[in-house]
Amino acid sequence: MFGPGDLENLRLKRLLALGRALPKRLGRPGMHSQGG
Image (cartoon, rainbow, N blue to C red; front, side):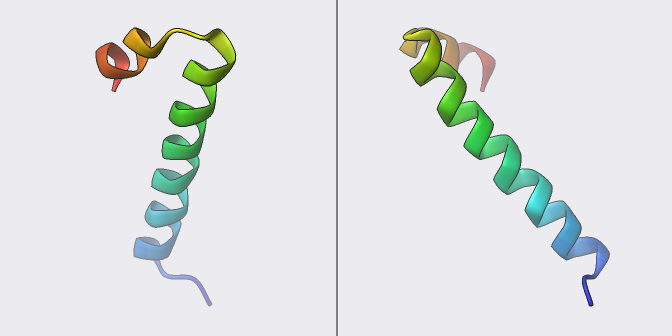
């Protein structure tokens, strides 16, 4: 059973994963620091 805190952690992990993957695809390291 997942609690509300676990769901939030999963969301944060997904956001972090996307935030790391997007800049790599775009090839713009500056956007990571600006959008983070």
